[in-house]
Image 1 (spheres, rainbow, N blue to C red):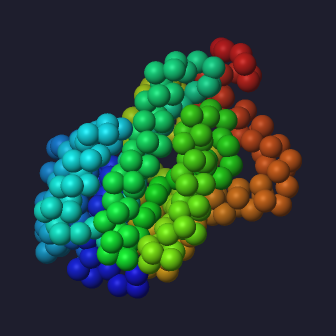
Image 2 (cartoon, rainbow, N blue to C red):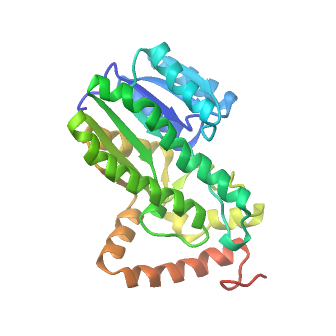
Length: 281
């Protein structure tokens, strides 16, 4: 897909952050966009911005973790827009803190949104794309999906799953004319951390001020990298120097990666209120 003009893109998590920025960047490249999010007010704002770029926009509010909402989203997108050329599975949440403190309900919620959401939506749109013999499936993972990140165990679980999911689909779907990419950003300045449903206000602010965030990209810069990766049909769209460095370190030596994680955990633990792994202030 070397040209996005007059294509239709479906973007989940489109009301804010990377989703919003990428939806707008796709519109600037000539796409009409289906915007999906649970935040109706946020969707309306992005809808107006896209229409100001002289592109069509369709808002579909819903919860990506609910099977019925995903089915409705896929059917509405095809019925109203005619087809879907690009699917961007971007909606996600994060839990910040020690895994031992998470309830099963916490685990089920993050898996429902970050894992089942993309799987169900991809499953719903695959017959449509295969029938047309074209399409591009893009899923937002994370550097935490390439290198397990302490303090983000549940998030890493879902993002590792999305990397493996995308790598497998890229091979399977190539004969059907469908391209597949996985996006692995490093730190990005979004509201994901602030809206984390685990950890207190002070711990979230502390993480935002950690050394990793000093290398963070803006959502807009991240979106430009994503669209560039789509146009180049990259299997892995690695974003920020942090991601390249950490993935390279882990591939060079898993032991060095482990030692880095130990240092990282000391920094994160301090910021989220843990003095030592397994201990509390």
